[in-house]
Length: 226
Image 1 (cartoon, rainbow, N blue to C red):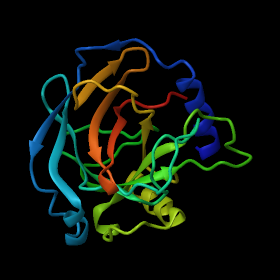
Image 2 (image 1 turned 90 degrees about the vertical axis):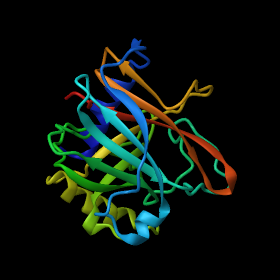
Image 3 (image 1 turned 135 degrees about the horizontal axis):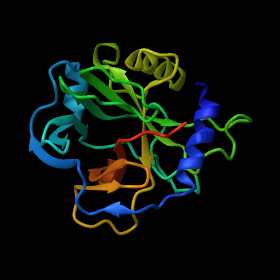
Image 4 (image 1 turned 135 degrees about the vertical axis):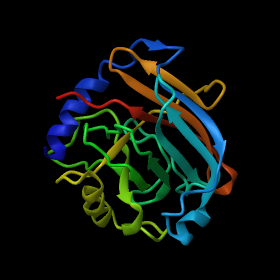
């Protein structure tokens, strides 16, 4: 599916949000102190926190594990707009994700992501004739195979998108959707279940460059329906 058609269906999904959310979601998040995976390059591991967020399913089985950067790169002078909510630049390293063996993890396009370790980089949805006005926000994360993404520096967005296709083993990048962060977050980390869309939404705190405190809101289970 082309990104344009994906954007269209994403808009349809998001226009009906917020939906009912359940305070006791079938998926849970727990904080574990654990070093980043050895499959990552030493340079990238050095940038990541030892705080890991483990997402488990209703049976307590690991769904995915996420590490974020010790300090996320915040663009100087950033101000959120109607369709860009996060102060990053396309290609920035955000963290890493591990899909455990036995997990049926899928990205936001329902692409199967094989067990393994991936980097997470920030991606801005393209804004051109095919995408203008087709979704409420443009904030995404792409997945790259750990052995193909070894430097923590900002990656060229086109290269990032091409590498991400390998993570999905398809002609479309592997993506996760960053939702608009809450203005007044409660106790974090938090996991809520959007019953209407069947999304598990994880909200966590993160530290940005310059001492800025950030909140990330990520769909870790669920996809945009076609």
